[in-house]
Amino acid sequence: MSSAKENYLAAKAAFAKTFEKHLENGVEFLSDNVWIDPEVEIAPGAVILPGCILRGKTVVGAGCVIGPNTLLENTVVEAGSTVNASQCYDSHLGPDNKIGPFTHVRTGTVTGAGVHLGAYVETKNSNFAEGNTVSHLTYIGDSDVGKYCNFGCGTVTCNYDGEGKYRTTIGDYAFIGCNTNLVAPVKIGDRAFTAAGSTISQDVPDGALGIERGRQAAIPGWSNKKLEKYVAKKEKLEAERKKG
Image (cartoon, rainbow, N blue to C red):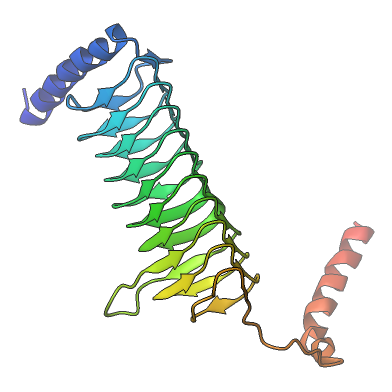
């Protein structure tokens, strides 16, 4: 028997014992299509859905729903949280969080109670106080975020300049507009706003609106020549479809 096969059979046998232990302890599974390292801790009443991989010193609290298709590595998930179709590494997720789908929680992320990190959100080395909402398509790295902040789609913390990494600080109840670039080091005050489409490189005081946009201009007729060949090509295709 090859060593690879021997290792596989040994791992399979060890997993069977681990799986049975959690079943007896009141953890709910819909199938055995999961992988759980022996040192993982799962509280009774937690639900582990198919396709999950729980590795290292991961701890899952009571009432959590993990998965489907979620990887947790050395990550604590406190009671009542859900982590759906996401990957989390070396982080601590607070109680009643809603993570996913397709969230990448990287090393050093710490969240308070009731935080939502949604679709295609990536976090790294950042602290989120309670009640933060980051719904989609956002990167928050090297940041300290106060409570009950709202992040619009497409927010990016620009934390790395090729040499050093710098932190972004955001106060309580801040609203970060869609497609805002926060160029660290920068501080957004309590109850401050950033206007959608702004690149913020200077501190925004408490209660202020930070806005940085170029003046919009329209050049008459500019696109007619630019699109002439394109429009002709599409009109030809449209005519051919109608004939056919």
